[in-house]
Image (tube, rainbow, N blue to C red):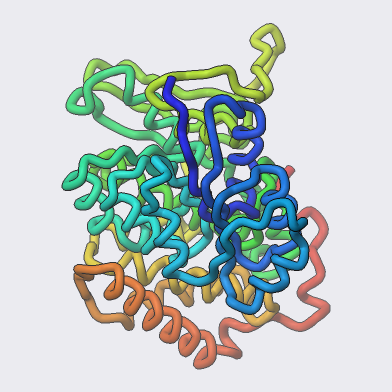
Length: 408
């Protein structure tokens, strides 16, 4: 197994910190060249002291001096800031692998440039493929880049597809926990508060992805990603609700065989898989005890209650920049919900209205994708502003969580 030198985009987030734990457990296999963070300067300073990268990148120029003041004189790496610096450390000749885990389109350009420079990509940033799937995957094929998904579902699908030829695979099945409102009546969703929606039953994640999981938008994004990663048409990608979250993905082959990937809910396993593929190595994750009785459920998702999942399929069928618009509008709508300006069901209404109002475009560059992303954000905000009464929150008393709300 070859050693790897890493740039970690989003080092202070959940995937980034778990990636560093994998590095910590395997110091003879992995070395960190660059750490790229947002505004969590304190944590970045601690990571620099432990992993001693050659370069550290922050989002804002004013944070460089703040970071420098937190570091001991014995080890101060080169300190940079901004989008150009993210690209610089993602294509540096010193590295062979980029862990792409920046949340949002901020990670798109650096990841795309890393693909074009034939770096191995551990992809944990949904927006890279949701917003720029055609562009990125064309570059992957053109440059022969290794792009290994880190999301548990796509990583599971990657493993399942090792069981046979891609041409023999008939259907890809992605599992969803169902989120905190799996059993909540549709009419009760008007009363959901941000605190309710942030209680994910399985994973601990950032606020936006937790809300996206509650609406099943996150699963919709995964459908779009799976299409680009594995070249399945939308109709061959199925979502099933599996509350136990033990089976992450399944592939059905032509002969009726179904291969499932099963593991504990620990992101260090797919992260390590992406770094060591095609080899496997011992991972510091819990093992499943097969002597213990267990009950696994599988259900069809409710497309009426969770409208955003259907919109993801529709945007994929529509093509062009539709998925980019979907993502941008969702981010604005989720922020409005978290800020108390939208009711929970109105997230989907904002996204659908934004998709309907934006013209069809086929982006041909990262710059054009970012331009469309910005336009979609502005359009989504205008939709929210124009529907403040219809989409806005109920009165304070109505916002109290009704008895029985939530998953059981």
